Image: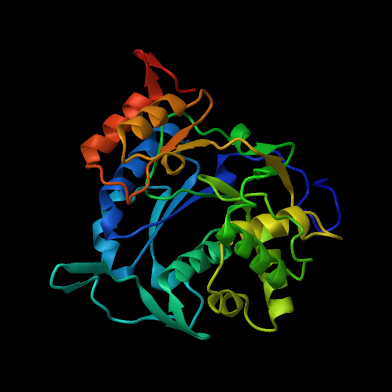
Length: 320
């Protein structure tokens, strides 16, 4: 993947002023987002931009995190035109039965699930930042060591997380590959088994613009309308397939890495003592973050303690 290939951005030495960290959040993750913001303030250079994207109704709650270099942006201002959220209760209760209601939107292509809207938000990044290096950080991540430019770039190219052989047995991942291939006009099955899903995922803005163009060209309509019509879809799988396989005359400007920058709790059964113990022993030197999913039943204090124990071993700091 030569950065000097036709259509590619010229090779350059990137700095923190080329980096935008993007976090899509909401009021339910307010405390977690606060911990993320504080960790970014500690471990990421202030020249990097941090963008919090939250529903307009939650803006006032998140404004406390704003600072020079950190913007709080309304979901409604980021989405392409034509999206309206339908009013709905957050929780449906009938007797002892309780179920959380996901967001429901109406878009130009009809009803859109909130999960798909979140993915459209990430794919809309060129509309809200000019930074070339996009780093996606969910609210349930905390940085525990410096995130430096050399962990994100190499010789004018940007890191692309790709884990070979990770998901051929997972039906959902296979479907995400198949959907991505169809939307991109690639041969179906060309990359089954590789995974592009992780934490602190890095994209290039210029490559994302070309991805939008490809979606529009193949789908015959605005790129977001193509995405909004999907039921089984992963934005990380889509971008990964495009950057890895979807180029012929132009280049993605990425190099491939298989090591995750973040120690992720989703690989462990954190509902058991054994799983928690394995998680605590699984953190490795060189990882810069820890992710414990917001759906895990830990208090904020318990989460912080679990992060502390995972990143220190026998009293020795394992970070960096």
